[in-house]
Length: 252
Image 1 (tube, rainbow, N blue to C red):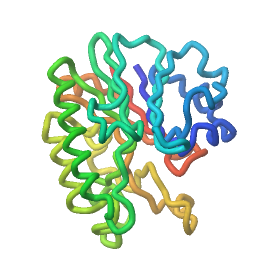
Image 2: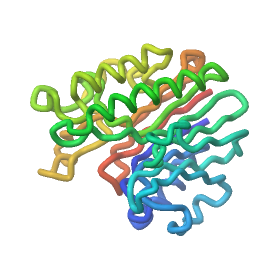
Image 3: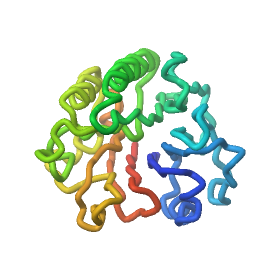
């Protein structure tokens, strides 16, 4: 079973940048998207997604945030948000239950320049962690998406220059560590513990992507019972169309 996750930075924009070819080439069983910036009725679906069940959680604010999941197998149940009004207005979480696991697609809030949104971000992190732990009481969990944090220094090109920047503050890194310590595994680091220069996001400024000056902020996390089923965890930097690239896992 192949799962893909991609922050597309605008679903309508990425459709004109080879999105259909990407789906055809990868043939995912489940495709999770973040930062869709649209409602489903605003998006002309490409034929490559025929045969997929589509689920969306869009922000109340037009053209902002949002997540979507396209899945070949119909889930048993789908939940939009986490059940907290204060945290569910921006369309950042979709939870899908399948027979033997629960999938959570997430677009974590950015703490923004000057860390001005850091207090909200830390509150969000705890609510999201509790959401994952609650789901894990039912079945093993796969979570994926743009977590907006580089966990360790190996996960970004210039850790010293970015200390206490949004996405690399001590608080955000500790929050992600706490999430993993709650019974989850970073799939990429599990299989590639020493791999460097492996990034999933690059600034549009200064030719960062061409020089591979990036950050790894897009993840697949697994409940411990699923780790033995993990066959591959990859980053796909060759896929263009967004400031992020897709990440994938394959499970037995």
